[in-house]
Image (cartoon, rainbow, N blue to C red; front, side, top):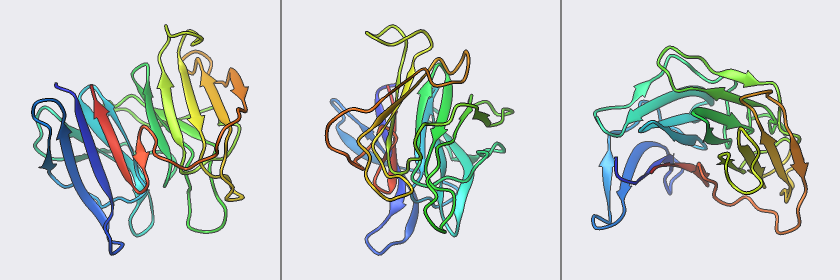
Length: 219
């Protein structure tokens, strides 16, 4: 498949939660096209792409969602609501793909109180697979943050790769400037490095979400 960016759902200017999806083709095409609507409107969702399929994860619509739906970019017929829901409903969480697994981390689980999550779960994208909690939670509860996967082979990246969680909000609703590094999850499901770095705290766009909508990139 050619490189593609997919923008999913979010809210419109009047606060309505959307189910819409759009696809951007860079290069000579340089245009956006409308995709079929998702099965469920979703705000505050996360998205990830794996093997040419876009996955929309959780979010909120009349409550917080654990459900997951998928869209095959090659077939492009319709969204499919998967039987495998996440183990935890999540809003304003983040997602990334590492070594063929989708990781969903953090976010909020309920409308009530300060309830940012530190938990992480993963999924291989298979039709008969289930989400499984990762024993190693993040060191800090986070919502509205960025999650990026670093594959092994890069400078300073250990075997198995790293998941990097940056910024966001804690249960005290304070912006975070720390970065948490979780690595070798395929081997031992534990964090192997943690660091706090200087710089500006923020709640800006992540690889999987920006504000209330989500982006999926297929390269």
